[in-house]
Length: 310
Length: 260
Image 1 (spheres, rainbow over the protein chains, first blue to last red):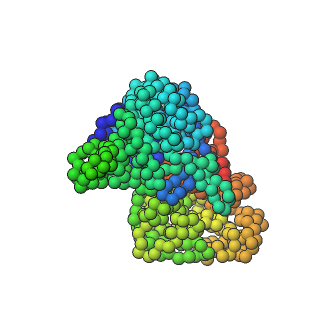
Image 2: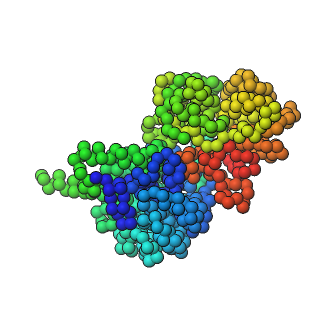
Image 3: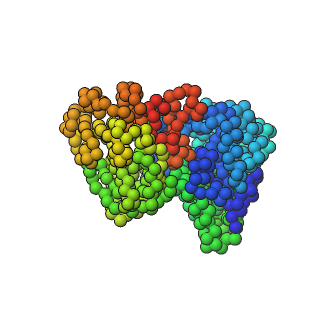
């Protein structure tokens, strides 16, 4: 009742930890068996090693948190030779997140990662708010996002998902642009740009000044965007943004998602992913649903039905 | 490392806005070394969403009790200060790598230097060192007398000298003034406190073994989110960084760059 087949990702269930919140799995692997996960979205890989931003890199906010890690990672080569090698022992497909400063970086990293046997699909991070160079323009200008998608698609041997930024005025336009460019799926949403200022120091709390807002506070925004986009594209959506429990997963499916990713909640409860997976069947039974897929997009027609039944 | 529902057995204010919290559970017996910490859920509310990293002040294996001392400063720690006996707290830990106590031979002398809420982990450290036959000397710095705590507890283990910024208790000034003026001889120094204090110690006392415990805002506290990284001093270091939560929080002086 939970298995989901998405392009490149044959999943036992629709739940995966979100990129950036789970590193490459080792730390959480000490707490539970990673085989229980539907997939694993690994931390963003860049062509070169990146140290990331100065600290403080995180700050709590009501119902959420801001982060400005700055894509710290050991570079694609080490990720392939060390991290992905370690993940081979698990029967869990990998969604490999990719970031870069310029198109060539993305293309290089994508080509390398798509050749790795346990990488089921790529996730193009065109929406990281925390890197100064280029990053965000890939995520806010539809033509540039489309061009990048096309170029990555041309070299990748596995399906390509594009992770969309919510920091745009027309999310549907972005989604359609990358779909037309050949994207096999969408991940949405990335974090919302935010900021916190300390009253004592009268300065921004984050060293990077601004950061990405995540957690339950952004869930309504994510639900709205998945709801809108899913009705305008035919490719599947991995929904994310503030998921904390099985009910939240159902809500994303009702909005139109085909799978989900859990981010910030891993910090609150490191066992949250297995717990959600365990809780889902009973919840589906209560809803008289035999497979979670049946719930996909069920909210779309709700309003029309009410008005036409008058 | 485990996630334990620990029962609050005692909570009291030991100095102004400084609370001593005792919790009971299996996690207590897992503590490997002094200087490790726990990641505590302050409330089951999304208002204080993230856990709070708090150092372990003491461990009692027989009663399965763990002591923490913290300052009620922000939303989460203020909520923790309102804990009542019998209440359950969700605690993740023990986490990180603590002070290497084996680095000091029996009969040797260790100086433990603490500043403010950096003092607590030194208490368990001191108890363990003393158990190993090491002579312990404590130099504790506080802003003033009102926020100072555990002078008596430390004194029971070894000589204890206080420094306060305003001179209301012990010597007026900083911990470094106390160390200089008393010309303390020792074999190894362990420290935990604000970065300026750690920097001053590193600048003046790196000629002998010196271990520093760092503090940083954390997300996961298990090494996955990269919120708490710091750069290594050695530019040719293979990784170039350390995570305060899982590589630290204790580092040998000169291993990482101390930045505020």
